Image (cartoon, rainbow, N blue to C red):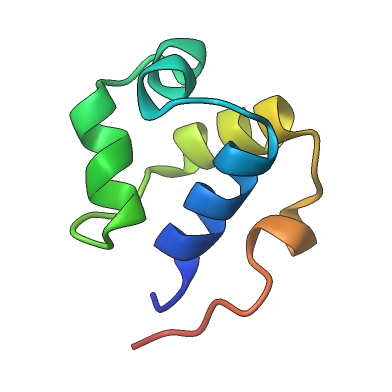
Length: 69
């Protein structure tokens, strides 16, 4: 998905979180967050739910400008 990684990074930075802190908050490794942000991998639904809660946003916000490749 194009832009999903960019959205994750944008929301993380808006919240003032490091990759490590976000990873701790949702129960993954820092490397997983890095891979998501670089679009190497995509997060599972359970991690998307956790990120939406941490970021305090809607699912529509989270998936804004995301398109399938």
